[in-house]
Amino acid sequence: MARKGNKVKAVAYTRTSSAANVGSDKDSEKRQRDAIERFAKRSGFVIVDWFYDPAVKGADAIETRPGFAALLDRIEGNGVRVVLVEDASRFARDLVAQELGILALIKRDVRVLTADGTDMTDTSDPSRIMMRQIAGSFAQYEKARLVGKLRAARERKKAETGKCGGRQSYAESRPELVALAKQLRSQRLSYRKISAELARRGHLTANGRPFVASAIQAMLEQ
Image (cartoon, rainbow, N blue to C red; front, side):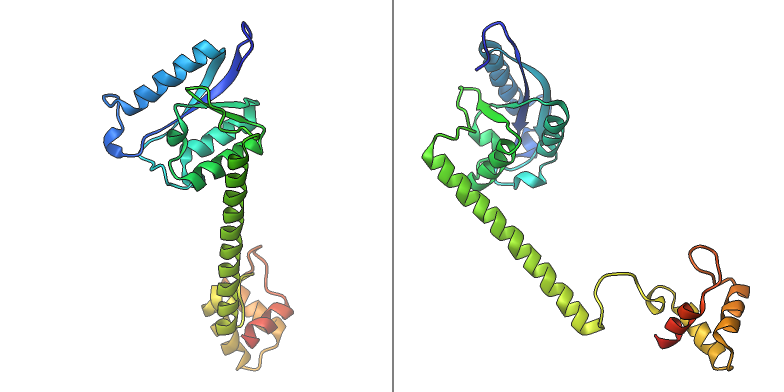
């Protein structure tokens, strides 16, 4: 807790899980704010900012929450190292989502305190340490799985089209240009004359210049 007479800056996070609970006439957010403010007052914290995720379910992934993302941005920008929440369920009901969010804050040297004084970032609890390791391993697995899926998709595309990613060919980006270049080549024109004729008809590079011979050759080979 903060030392007596020495206010410590904190930010607060609230969440409502249903759109039906969102609004000035609803109790959920107000109840959370009241509980957090009472705890902050008796514990010597001054709340410098509030972050709210309305209609976000407790099982929703932390990285999909705009309010939590804004909270991270604020923490990284102003040096506040304490986050206050009403209770663990308001942070996240799903245990994996909860621990992944806690991990994100621990990595930023941030403490997460509930309105009853529980330190959710406590690193001395063996069961919490185990859950964070499981959550971190799960997140790493999901990341590796996504990378693998993207790699497989790129390889399939390459097998089907002969290329994947990178700059589009002229045949892909400007098919009419390639068709005209081939038509001019059929008239036995040199690369230089083809370039000049393309320029005369308004076909230039992105920099507004005539195509060089190697570019004309590339078009003709597509």
